[in-house]
Image: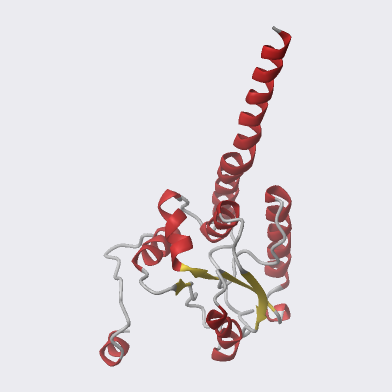
Length: 202
């Protein structure tokens, strides 16, 4: 990274003195972003240049969000594919959305991310889904491009994101967001409705 920085002036390195974890590191990175667009690139060697080029080409089209899904999903382990499908369907059901993949290398307009990232206190991998869901809830008129991309096989690699502890963290963060965005809205609507009934009755 330091060698690359010597060659390219636009590279900025953020070095954590201690391990902040995935969510806090991602948040720190997005808050430091200066360009018009930002997205993450996991350090798992899963994303070849060809796959990245399949989504980066849409940046010039001035979309607000570029949401890609993996095209060659067979490159991943069966249980990871199954978990991703269940996870995506659950989020779509709870938040009334139609997104094929929430944890992909989504490209965001930086201003959209910065608008909501400070209010996010997530400490799990759910932060990726939460960023996307909050952006969609707060910005009704945004231009979205759905596309696909190719990955390399990582079937021999074990991921820390698929264990019981991580799953419990994600479940708690999901419930918190659901209450904040959905249940709270129904709660206040019910209170207003009951107030109106009381006034009418009186």
